[in-house]
Image 1 (cartoon, rainbow, N blue to C red):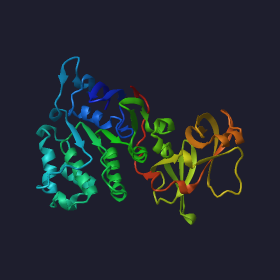
Image 2 (cartoon, one colour):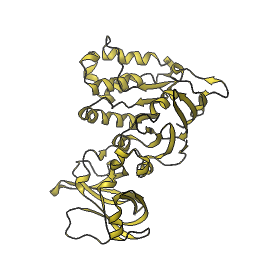
Image 3 (cartoon, rainbow, N blue to C red):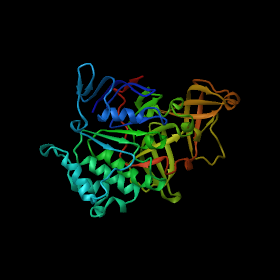
Image 4 (cartoon, rainbow, N blue to C red):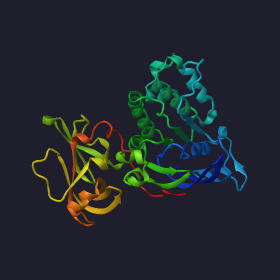
Length: 376
């Protein structure tokens, strides 16, 4: 799928001016509250008519003010999952699902109900009504209803925002299955670095109604300056890795990637399994000599690529093998260590940094970075 957006739209005093093109499998619209994410996804859905501009999916024009084209929502073949599940309370789960299927033309129904029920793990819920479901269960049913409309595009507007951490952990694996097992492209709205690092192949960053950056997740999350101030501690490198071997004596797993080997707490995954890992910049230490007598197990040879002062801190890009990771240290540390571009160093990462919030098993969501561009 190629999603092309080039629109201008005003909502009261707020102006949305966004232009980007992406062919990502799961594209995250990312930014702080009030940045225009929901307005943009509503324009893609057809809930709003743009004041000016064009929206197209795989060359199919959904809106073009210059040509006088506007395809209404019910003809766009999009599945929309809102923050709140918006299920019909008087219908059972099975009836809610069948309602979604009703929207797909009979000869274009590509989605099998039994397969959707199995993928989302909702077989035991079919005879229940929404009022008896947990928040995570309701969202899974809402996703199933949207899938059964056989959409050409899925839109998800912060589907986890109303859930507590336990329910978020419950539903995340199902979102990964949706991303990896269906061929339906997804536009996913979020303001959480942890969510987009785990799920997204690509990110479009919005700030005050304008696109400030667009590209592969692995590139965007290394740009700490693009993240909201409160989320910068969560930014850093995202690496798609593979299980090389298990070190059962210590319950550790050795992962390989373009950056080198990393050791994490045992996952029990088989050799060759895909793992996505987030290395937060705040979890990376820099040493000018290979450390000795240190508890940290992950020591990667690196070269300083760039140093960007940020107030009392400095964001340091490190080239590790064929990958790049980020470290956030104080400017004083940079001065004491005499860091400079081109300098050989060592990146030190504690194995305990790779907890459940930063290590995710399953099919890697990475993709080639070609044909991704954006500007405001």
